[in-house]
Length: 127
Image (cartoon, rainbow, N blue to C red; front, side, top):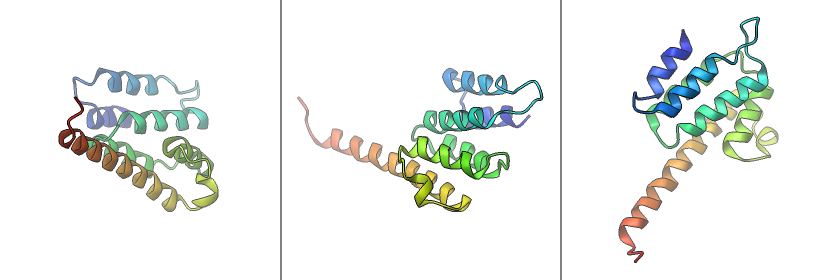
C-alpha cells in the first residue's frame, strides 16, 4: 500500500506524530475506498507542514504529490495556497508544474529561514 510506503519513507520510528497522521490518512477514505478532494487537500497540507524543514520527509511527500493524479488542478491550488500561505497562489500559478515548483520553492525558503535563524542564534549572544 502506497501510504504505508510513504509512512516508512517520511517518518522515522521515533516520530510518533507523523506515524499517527499517516495512520489517520489511511482511515479517511470513504466507503467506496476513495478520498474526497477536501480530505486529500487537508492530508497533503498536513504532511507537507509536518515535514518541517526535513528534506527527506519533504521529498517523499512531494514525490507522492507530484505523482498523484487524483489531485486535480483546483485541489493543487488549494494545497499550494494553504502550504505557502499565499492567497494569490491560484491566480499567479496556472499550470500543474508551476504550482508544484512553487510548493518546492516555499519549502526551500523555510529551510533557508531556519538555517539563517540558527546561524544568528550561534553568532549573537542573547543573554
